[in-house]
Length: 386
Ligand code: FES
Ligand SMILES: [Fe+2]
Image (cartoon, rainbow, N blue to C red; front, side, top):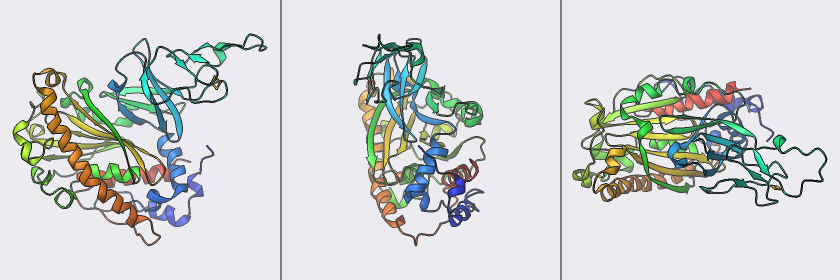
């Protein structure tokens, strides 16, 4: 875990990153080293994932006490678990005895038990069982609990920070809560979560979800006709970006399935009720708040050339409770699967195209403001966090 520092970056990369500020009209795209270079990936793990806040998914992935999941945040094994008191916590997923990963995968437990020598931790991280330690001088279980990280739940999302003293989560999210207020994201219920991997850098995956530019070329016949030209880019505060656009019918269904629309969310204003807001909660959550619900991806690096993704679909509780919901929801899932299946070959093609020293930084269209804002944020993280 020896971290590279920004001062270790080659001077030409520093110069290239300096061209990423300012938004879509003036910024250059991130240099390809940010997508292909292992040294940049190591620095990224340090300054993008092990500092600040990282969204790790919807809070209802840990719906009940004892629900846990083993995650990788910036190369650090992390166990996220909901306590008996209902509080979501995160711990270093590293046993205090001799370092085995304590939990794997996801599930539900009453205690977290390391399979190596059976040290056992309560859901709040205290070491509550350590067999055959009676002859060990001065051994005090209270000194050997799991290392705890800071967790916050906002808008129904779970955020973890590996920093000892992170910035305020509310300052980090800026005006995201205000902009999304009418969707009542906190109450939304996850009805589908599907994991997969893609052979591309995690940023490329997040980017394609966030831009309207590719719709006519990559999604003709499936979703392109649904989307109008989007609104002007919006200025926001905090570590996120957003872009709203109206739709013909709903963005949550394929063009041929528009008659299957679920009810529109009650509190939306007139334009929100006929459009989709695409937002990127930097670095790892990309979300679309549509007229009927929320669809999103968790996206994390698995080396520079591969990413681990989870598609998550949520609807308001009253929609989920209505008769016939499960059947209609399948049409929504199909639309999300079809679109991503159209994106993936292009992401792989993009990866093949960028793995060369002859790839130069590009420029952005007015249809890519979220991508441009992320490029500026990311470049600044790499350059300024020493
Ligand atoms: S490494 Fe976990 S109990 Fe020994
Ligand atoms: Fe797409």
